[in-house]
Image 1 (cartoon, rainbow, N blue to C red):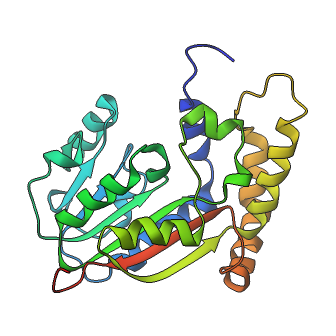
Image 2 (image 1 turned 90 degrees about the horizontal axis):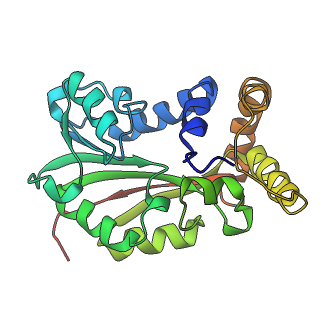
Image 3 (image 1 turned 60 degrees about the vertical axis):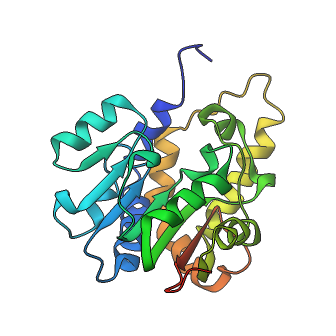
Length: 236
């Protein structure tokens, strides 16, 4: 693996996961409900920011990467590098996809998110599931952990949120990632890079079926886990 490689190639490959990204955009949009303001925590280049039908000026994007911030700013979003730079405490909706696992102190991050929401405001978090599915890709992109429904609920509820739903998703992806993890053990130098042809095959052929199976097995297993929560109207 090249010393300069940081996992950015994987992010670019994931843009070709049309069905997968479409599903995530649907989840973001669905849980936004009638929100008038929102914050995308770890917005990247806005892949999921645009899922919400709101004027760009009503969406705050938190993104540490300078180049990505510039792209977001060019699209009209309010952009900051760190959530501590967000002065608002009245946001309707905060969402975050595949970000919390990159943060060493996830409890502190969740508390900061809690403070930016208005009472009654809604939260949507989506992260990788199950530490036993950890692969060289997790190491490559800097994941501190993967979550279970229980551990994600603990960190969200610990910040003061009332959890409304938690569920696993991408049921077949669980087994695909488990296979990838097992294969890592037999590689002399696993590098964690995604295969674009395999990803496209899985996205087009397997993921639609996996999505249906996840409806049945959402409490048991999946490659990812998400949670929907609200900030209490009266702070505890």
